[in-house]
Every structure is written in structure tokens, then in C-alpha cells.
Length: 431
Length: 58
Image 1 (cartoon, each protein chain N blue to C red):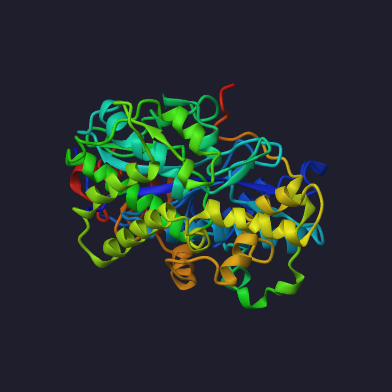
Image 2 (cartoon, chains in turn purple, green):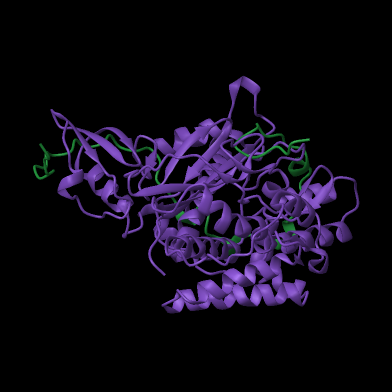
């Protein structure tokens, strides 16, 4: 597979009983602490190339640019761990016995939603939105069977909260009336060459294998689109109707998707189509291993091997965690407690991390790689160049694709190539 | 005219950062006592602000 710049954004939610009192907001405090720490680089950027900021009541982390489905997991987890560190510092220094909860999910118990988005740098040559609707929407509408995080929304257990809350096939909105395909067009790069595809129909995931699979398959599909290799893709008659049907059903035998020609198939069949196509572009061992995992997951769903699959599929593992909590503890809120506590990022409180420690969840990376990614950017993207420039110059202004250095002059340096790790003359422009 | 960033003026030293990242605070699964793990009612009660998540059309 070719390298494809990609990353994720998460709106983390913090909660503390002290919130609101004397204006205490742990989101803001965490940001203040971060900017006064050795992880801060310049502006909203931190040393590992990620951007961290306050966004409508959330602590948002946008990962550094990574080039593959494996690195994106590592840098996403690094962002999670940085926030967990800040949470612990706040508890020690400011809130005492009062806990600060930090959630990596998409809804609070009252149903209020917040986002987790994926970004993929795709060639501008792929026709938008036409080819994306034809080739990508069938993937995004059916991948929830292995990328869903699971959640309780409006009293129901759903495979994917973001899919449940999606209303349109195509939309430019990100808060209401959102679409399977989002039309936002902010490339943060040379817009003549690249589109930053903004995928907002995905969930906040704790499980490393699920994150990896989501990026392996989605970036593979996008590469196939760039190559024009998906002309025979199955066409869905009504993707939203099928998404709404499947998202509330845990039994794979009852999932269904209607094709344009009236045939009813399973979302597993749609994903098998993409599996076959991606097989033709895998080249190295990482990719072969990911492909095998993808195939095993689809086989497992078809054969309903749910206990085994729960190691890799988050909606299944969360479901089991909720059931087990209900067996141990009685009370009306137990299901919701378990559902939300699963997504706490603090290892001592998180049901997910409790299960990971118990060996119930498969990992694809390790703590040493994540520790390194907390301090350092990926070496094969613009993130490393941005870091080098920030380490060299005093920075007056910084964004993904541009910075202004203050060395007596005010020089603007454009970083329009997200793959560039060295300064290239065409982009080292001064103003 | 395009200009290479070749001259490297010395970067001003940043003022001392007050907080240093401590990996030990977040990578210590050995210190977590499973017997102390409890479900927390606050997890079922928190309220978040609306963010960039969808909101299914009625």
C-alpha cells in the first residue's frame, strides 16, 4: 500500500463534581497545564506534532500527520495518555479526593453527542463527491460491524453511536443533520494536489485493533479509489435506512443491506468485496497481518464467534462488559455506568483497561512505542519538519501548513506538502 | 522570490517549563489494584456540552 497521510481528532470530555464552582473547568485547566509543560511546542502544537485545543466545551486532540494505519494508532494513544497524565496532575494538585473523569467516547448519559473524526489525505484527482458516494459510502455505511464502539443512546444499545446519529448520505454539517460523507474541504496542504477527507461517521475507540482495522481498510479503499479500481463496487439503494437498521442489531444474521438492483445482502458481504480488492494492494508483512485480521474478523462475524471477536471489536466487548457488570451489581444505572466507564481513559477506572489487563483485548502496539510518541513526532511526515523548525526558530504563528518565524524579520514558511520532512524551495517562501 | 531557510538565528531560550511529563504516572498498570476497581455512579450522571457529533434527524 502507498503511504497515505492520515490522523484522528477526538473531543475528550472531562467531568468533575467541582465543575462550574468558581469557574473551574478541567478542560481549560488541562490545556493551561499542557502549555506550561515540556510537551508544549508552539501555539496549539505539542512536541509530538499533534494539535491540542479547547473546542466547544471539550479538550480536543488532533494527532500529528501519520502515514499509515499502524502509526495512527500509536499517536492516537499517545494523545489519550497525555490527557490522562494531565488529569492525574489536576487531581493531585487541585481537586484532592474529588475525581476528574476523562471520557473517550461520543455521548454523555443524557445523549449529548461530541465528535471523533478521521482525516485522510486523498488525491484531488478523485472526483468529489461523485466517486466518493459511489465507492466509499458503501464502505462507511457497513464498516460499523467491526469499527463500532458500542454505546447506549436513547435507551438502546447501538453498535455505533455516530452511525446511529447520522441522518444524511452527504452533508457539510458536523453537529446536526450530519452525513455519511462530509463535504468539508480544508486541505491543510496544497489544495491543487490533495483533499483532506474528513470522516465524521466514526466512533471514539479504545481498542487498538479496532482503530488499526478502521484505518487499514479505509485508507486501502481510498487508495483503490485513487487507482480507479472500484468500478464494480456494490451500490446501495438506501444507505441511511440500512445503517439505521443494522446499528441497532447485534445478531449478524439479521443485518441487511439492499443493493440498487433489489438484492438483499449482508454488510459482511459488502466488506468482503473490499477485502478482496485490498488483497491486491498489500505488499509488506504489516499489511498482510492486517489483511488477515480483517478476514478473521469478517469470518468471525459470519460464524458468530462473539467472545473471540470481542478481543478486536469494541461494540462486542463493551456489550459483554455491560452484561458482566449487571450480573455483579444491581441497580438502575449499572448499565449506563458500565457503558460510560468502559471509555474512561484512566487505567485505574476504565473498564476497557481493566479488561485489557485481564487479556480480554488484543493489542497491536506496546507502551514503549506510545511513550516515545508522546514526546516525538512521526519521522516520515511534515510533523517532524514542523518540530525541527520550531526547535530552530522563535515562532510567531503556527498552523498545520504554515508558520511565521520571528527572527527580526517576519518570515512565512509554507508547509504545503504533508509528506515533506525537509524544506523544499517551492514551499520555503518568504513574505 | 523564494527564499531557503538557511540562516539559523539563535532561538531564544524558552523560559523554564514548570511541569515535566512523567510517564510513570500513566504507564503503571502493575500498581492498579483490581480488587479496588469499582463502578462509579458519576459515570452514569455526567453531562457534556454538545460537540461535533451528530444528532439524528427526527
